[in-house]
Amino acid sequence: MRRVARCAGHRAAREGGRARGAAALREAARRRVEARGQQGNRLGGEDGVAVETPKDAEVERKEAGRKRKLGHLAVNAGVLHPEETVKGVDLSDFTVAETAAYRVESEGTSDGGQSPVQVWWKRKPNQIQAKGSEVTVFLKLAAPLAEEKRYRVRFVGVNVNAAHVDYVHAPRQTRSVAVHASQVGYRPDDPFKRALLSVWLGTGGEMRYAEGTPFHLLDDATNAVVFSGKSVRLKSATDKESFKAGRNYGKTDVHALDFDAFDKPGRYRVYVDGVGCSYPFETGRGVWDKAFRVSMSGLLHHRSGIELGPPFTDYRRPRTMHPADGFRALQLDITMLDGDAEAVRRACLPLVGKRPEELKLVQEAWGGYMDAGDWDRRSLHLGVSYLLLELWELFPGHFSQVRLALPPDEQQNALPDLLDEALWNLSFYKRLQLPDGGVRGGIESTAHPRHGEASWQESLVAGVFGPDHATSWNFAANAAKFARVADKVAPKLTAEYREAALRAWTWAEANATQVEDAVRARGGKLKGSERERNLAAVELYALTRQPAYHEAFLATTVLKDANPELLKQQDAVFAYGRLPEGLGDAALKQKAR
Image (cartoon, rainbow, N blue to C red; front, side, top):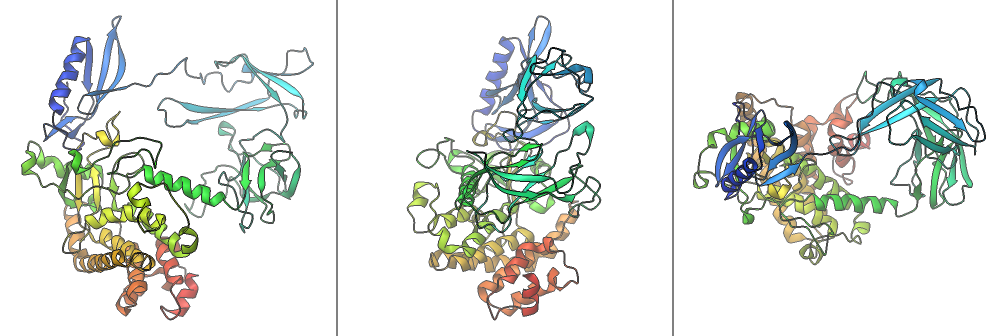
C-alpha cells in the first residue's frame, strides 16, 4: 500500500485493527486484488496507537488484463465498501439539444410527427448517488398542445432507455416543474399561504410568465375549483437579491400565487392555467404538528452515544461513539475557533505513535447531535436546543401534551418530551464544561468519514476542543433559557443549569481576550462573537433580572443602530422583544417587535 507525505487526519482505532487490516490485504493479494492508497493520509489507529494511515484505500481487481475498481477499504481495512455501479451508458449531451432528435406525434395522425422548434435542457445531481443525475429536457413546439389530446414523443436521436413516451395533455391533472406549493401544507388559519410559479430552463435561461396569470386551487379528489386568483411577480430574472446583494440565484422570474383568504380544510393542488399543477398538499389544523414530529424524529436519529431500535425507532443502529464501547476522544490544545477537521488533524500529529495511556482521554465526550454528513458535534449545534426551548417558551400548554418517540427512560420521566429532546443535546455540552466554568467547543474527527464507515465504525482520531468564549456564551444562553422556561416542571434540574450558565458567562468574560490572542497566534481566523455574547446577556438578564447583564446587552445590540441588521442578532432581538413588563428599555423593546 502506497503512502503519501501530505496528511489529512482522524481517530484512534479499536483493538485488533492492525490484524484485521493485514488480513484484508492478504486476502486481497490472494485474489489478485490491488489496494491502492489515495493521495493524502488520515490519522487513524492500530492496536490503540495513533498512526498515519492512507486517506483512502481503493481496491482494484485485474480482469482480462484490465483493472476494475471494486470499492474502498473501511473500518481498519476490515470492510470493503463497494463501488457504485451504473447500468447502461450516460446520456450523450452531443444530441440532447438537437431538435431533430425528437418527434412529437399527435393521436390520429400519420404524418410522422414534427420536431420541436427549440430544445433546452438542464442536469442536476439526483438524490445521494455519486453517479446519478436528473436531466430535464424542455421542448418548444410550433403550436400549443390541445387539452385532453394524446401525444407520443419519440426519441429518435437521444440514447434513453425508452424509444418513446406517451402523454395526455391534461394540465389540470398533470404536475408541472414550474408550480411549487408547500409540502408541509397550511393550517386553515395561517395568515400567509403562498405557492410559487417559477422555472429555470437551463440552456434556455429564464421563463417569463405574464403578470396576473390566472391560477386556481383544485380539490384533489374532485378537481373542482375552490379558489381562484392571479399571480404577482415577486422578482424578475434581472432583479438583485437582498440577502446576497448583487446575486440572483433563481435566474428566472418568480411569481407569487397567494391564497391567504382560503381556509377550508382538505387536500388540494394549485393549478396554473395552461401550465400544470403542484404536488397535492393538505390544509388542516394538524399539518404543522406532522412536520414537527418528522423533524423531531430526525433529531432522534441523529443522536450520538445512543443505541437506536424498537420500541422507539423502527431503524436499528448500534450505540455510536461511546466510551463504554471503546471509543476514545482525545483532549486537544486548540479550540473550535481554530478551525474544523484539518485543524484537528494538525493538533493530533504530535500524538502519532503514542500509547493510549500516554494520551489525555475525555470520557464525558459522548452524546449530542451528529452533523449532517459526518459525526462532529461542534458547539454550533447548541442552536437546535435553543429553538426547542423557544418553542416551549412560546407554547407550553400545547407542547406539554405532545408525546414524542423517545427512549423508555425519557418517556417515563416527569419532564415534558420536548424538553427531554432539548436536554439531550444541551447535557452534552454541560458534560464538557470544566470546573472553572469554561465550556469546550465539542468534538470533531480529523477528516470526513472514510468511504463505507458508519458512525459506530469510525476509525479516525476524534478530538475534543478546548474551552472558548463563544462556546461558553452560547452555552450560557441555552442553559439560562432552560433554567427559566423549565423551572416549573423541573426545579432541581434547572437550578443546576442556572449555576452552569452563570459560571460559563463568568469564564467567557474573563478569558475572551486570552483565547482570541491564542487563536491568532496559531494562525486562526476569528469571525467575532458579539452574537453569542449578546444572546447570553439577554437570556441571563431575563433569568436573573440583574442590571449588569442588561448593560452587557445594550453595549453590543444592533437595536441601537439607525438601520439595524437584525439578522446578525435575530435570536437576541426576539428574546429582548419578549421581555416581561418592567424589564428592559421600552423603546428598544418596541423596536425589537
